Image (cartoon, rainbow, N blue to C red; front, side, top):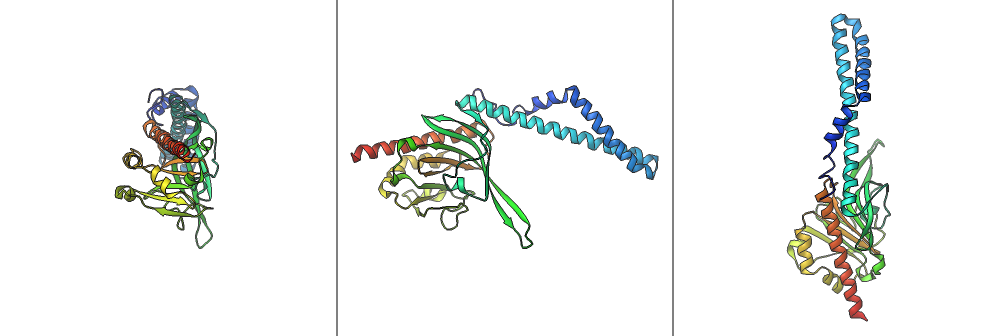
Length: 292
C-alpha cells in the first residue's frame, strides 16, 4: 500500500543501524561489557588467573548481548510505530492511544481482562471506525491457587452503524469462523453474553462448513436470509482473510484471529468491514423502502 511500510518489521533494520552508530550506544556497550566483565573476573578470581580471565570475557559477552537486545527492542518498537503511522496515512485514519474498547459485542466482552495494543480511528464511508489489535485474556487457577493467563489476540475493525438506525430484526447477528478463538456463542461461549442466541444454518453447505451463524431472539428470519444472499455468502467464503463479524445494537465488529502485522492483511480487514457495512446499509434501506 502506497505510503505505508509493508509490515511492522520493514524499517527495523534501518533503525537498528542508526542506534548502533550512535556514540551513546557505543559508550553504553563498552560500559556494560566492562562492568559485567569486571564482575565476572571478581567471581572467578578465587579459582586463579585463568578462570578470572575467562570469567571476564564471559561477563563482557553477556553485557554485549544484553545491550544488543535492548537496541533490537527499541528498533522493533520504532519500526512498528513507523508502520502504523504509514498505514494511518494510507487509509485516511489517525493513530490513537486508545487502550480499551467498549464491551459492545461478545468478542469485546470476552475473557477476564481486555486491552488494545495498536489502534487507528477515523471514518469509513461516513461512519466512525476503528482498526487495530485487540486481545482478551482468560484467568486460570490451578489446584494450588496459582494464577495463569491465556491470551487470545485478534485483529478487529469496529464501525458504528447506529446513525443508520439498525432495526431490531438485524441487530444481534454473530458470524463466527469455525475453529476461531471465540469457539461457540451460546452455552459454550468464552464470552460473557447477556443475550440469548440460536444457531442458524443457511442453504450453502460450504458456508455452513466454514462458519457458525448465531442470531439473537427477535431477528427476522426472512430478513436474515435476505441479508445473507448467495452473492454475500460467496464473498465471505472467498475472502482472503478468515473473517467473522458481530452485529449488535448498531455496532459492527469484523475480526480475525491473531494480529495482522502487514499492510495487506490489515487493509483486507478494513475493506471487508466496508463491504459488510455497505451490505447491511443496503438491506436496511431496502427494508425501509418496502415497509413504508
